Length: 430
Image (cartoon, rainbow, N blue to C red; front, side, top):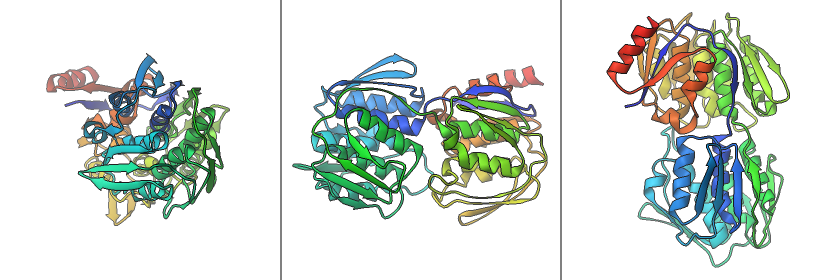
């Protein structure tokens, strides 16, 4: 079993380069099969979720060529199989984007119901509602979503709740529908905009991404393109909170500061100094951070994917903080692990009350999901001892070279898999 072992107590200092946005890359790679021409995509993160999706795309007949670690060429002209196997879906939730891509291009798709991190109920009813509105027959049979249509026709789609996945999935299908589709109450996240920009670069006609209403005029075919994925705002925010929690001074490079506004606002509120540049943000924490209140909301609100990272930081801030989680009901699982490290937290329903402590103590903890796992690593870096984080398979799903990047800014941590390696690390740092 792979683990991270961490010796805390060292401020993180230096520069760290942020990779491409995992959530944007997954949808863009799925959308790339919607043309028979070759598509080149760069700035993709080399993480497990991306690699599993590329295997799934290969599995249905597309040609996938890894140019290098962060660049891929995809040609979907050879796709003859519209059934995406369960083995891929159970590993990553984002495989469901192949539903919208296949339905849009071929008017048929079969995709197993999705897996991924267990952070709460994430129904796909709004996806299915959107597909049905476009004229598809959609059924769930033997654990699969089966969608097919003689033709897709543009319609007015109003989402009952703001949902990133359904916004992107239905947008992909509507790209090759007849006529005009108007989608209202849509998600406005940066990766929604990035997917729309990618589709437009292939010849789609999508307007309004990033606002409450997206209008799509269907086209008959899409063509090849070259495209670069936006930087990952969640990876950037993770390193920014790591700087805050460890009393460090970290500059995150290759970012779009506007995408980080909610994160920057909270860091400033608790007492960090934040300096913005054209494509970089510097966070300086001199200690004596103070409490604040956080509520997760759809973009441009504070992102649910940053909630564990700020939770760890608030547990080290003076005073009483509260976190209200309004997106996923199981997102507080990491707090039980954090309590093992000395945090003082009380959870009631979807709210957590956090009494700040001066320092954590090292412990053996387990990552319950992707972002919580990264947050527990931050906690380990802020302790006075040694922390072991188990189940890092979750972290590897979404962070590229996480331990290596942290080491580059002063972290003492390694990826290990045996007790012997743990003992060796402990002797080295003691």
